[in-house]
View (tube, rainbow, N blue to C red):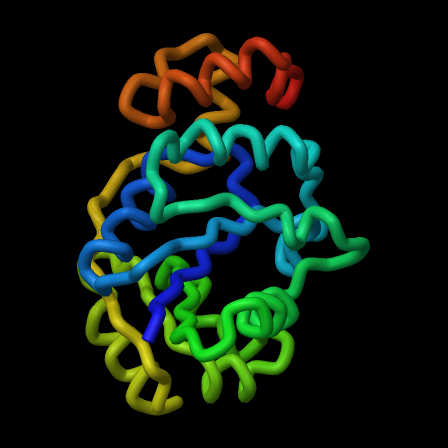
Length: 198
């Protein structure tokens, strides 16, 4: 059975924390492919202005160069309205009949899955690959057991970086070495992204 990982998020901008999680999920969970899906409108971040979808899509393409197992999809960017994970997974499932589909996400997002759209269907029909930070394993284990979710927790490589911090550092002119790929940083600067935020 074909094993597909779907990695969703705003990726504003994509950084090494995202990149390492995707690649580690592919390796540790023996995924045949990963589809990275930037959200058009993230339902839990409606109060934040997002960088234009085309730019976030382009940065993701630069973040995974030459990796045939990882593709970037504009499936959510092409739609109007809020990007709900269940709608995206349903569509991908219909395009890949018979595939085992897992959703890749961080631990904090996973622990809030009961607040997502159609949580029962998500839990019943899909698997999850969770990037677990040190110390959260007991809470994750109890949560997975309570809801009887098909999930694998991976101790993803910890990177002290966040998209918010990257934006602040770009504004102040600090070095982003080890935080985002050089090609992504070059794209940000060439297109004048994240200026005037701080």
